Length: 251
Image (cartoon, rainbow, N blue to C red; front, side, top):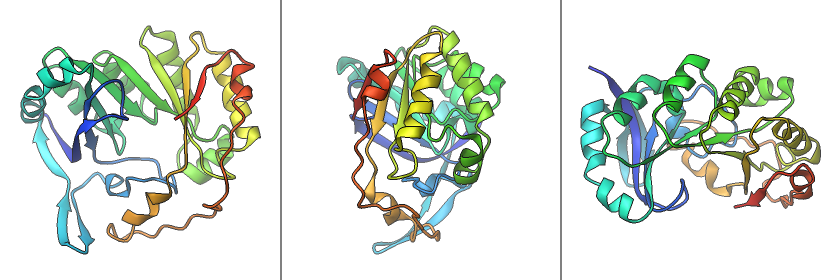
């Protein structure tokens, strides 16, 4: 029986894809982005969060059938509002078998994968076959900096991005703007150059820095240590993208 661990299900989400959506946050992520705003999704196992209102366990195991049944109750409302279901995390590709099993049991509905792109090519291919749109994150384009800051190799991510661009699935590249780190002109220019060479050009979403990211770390027993200036204004030059025939939106 295929099972997975979910750390949150957000209903009536309006920023995780088109229309009104239900977003499933899957536990576990191989990346260690220091600005991560879901630190409770990093560990693949259930864990205890300590807060002012007391302790609570984050991470619930579902069978694929259980989760699909829960989501299917919401499908009629989501469809009427032009929305659907989004799988996020953590990193949903870490539970690729579970995501595929759930999607195959859903009623007809728009399904979006929100991913870092870090997985085996085989797992990525399997999930692409059951979704309708992909939000694909890019952070740092220097391989050494990516390894040092994010904690994993960049090459598998770019290989999966190439696989996605060669498919016919709609996709959006999203870039978190971290002051002085990912938002530099040099980094954004390298991303724009890479995207401009893909067989299908994506829409690019530039995501403003989330200052609330550090608030959850203490509850998770982790330490938030930003080595960037959180007060620094983030003002990306959209011309870096438009000059390469890419549509970029500051969301």
